[in-house]
Length: 317
Image (cartoon, rainbow, N blue to C red):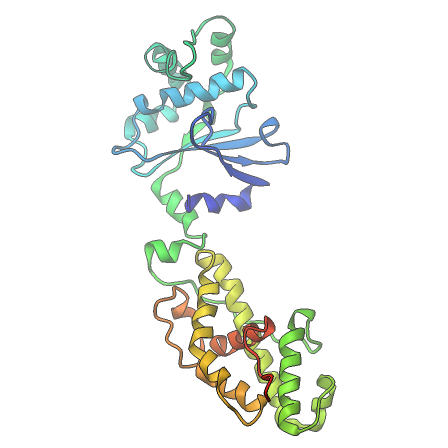
């Protein structure tokens, strides 16, 4: 299931159908939005106690051939066997000899497919169905090796957690744009209100910071930290399971919220104390810990402020 997420970039849509009534389709990768009516690939996943043998797959071939024959779907472009213990040598050789595979399949129809494709009836290999088998392109049947599976898995967000070995290198974060993005509006407003509280005079917008060089420099540092945290969020999407970054945010929140809720001379001092506290929060339990820098922790405070989970100005200030 983790590996299957690596397929999503190769298809318009990937769907799992494994289970009763799946008609031999486990994971389908659709090349167009027409789904089964157009080009698609099938991934038949097997978790057996042994490497796959020919006797394990005859009925699977039979399902694909029979259900495409009766019009349940068009034949897949490719049909891959994906197995936790791999594909045995005998089967792998057959998959690479499509003509011999067809003949062996026909020989094994009676024992594996006649009563195995569906429980509602027996299916004889004769007449038009036999002609369909003889014309069917057995070259579509193939396999995925362990090396191929792991290489593809390495491009998912589950790999570092499943196999260890550390996270890949992080790209450098973007520089904050001169004109703040709309997505920054809330935490910037919070910063301006905190600065105004410190000055004893409200600041309407960032242009007002030009008259206060120390605060202006502080403002740009906070934005750089915010962009560090945003870069970490994007990095997490590609390297760790969904929800990992959210958990990291929660850890930072619980590590700093008591400081934020404490009494401070003004909102500016509250913000500085909270951001400083974020640098010391222990993150050893989170898979992103090894890739998280001090700037990321501090920037997460501004992400939390952007959602009003942290506030620099309290109601009683």
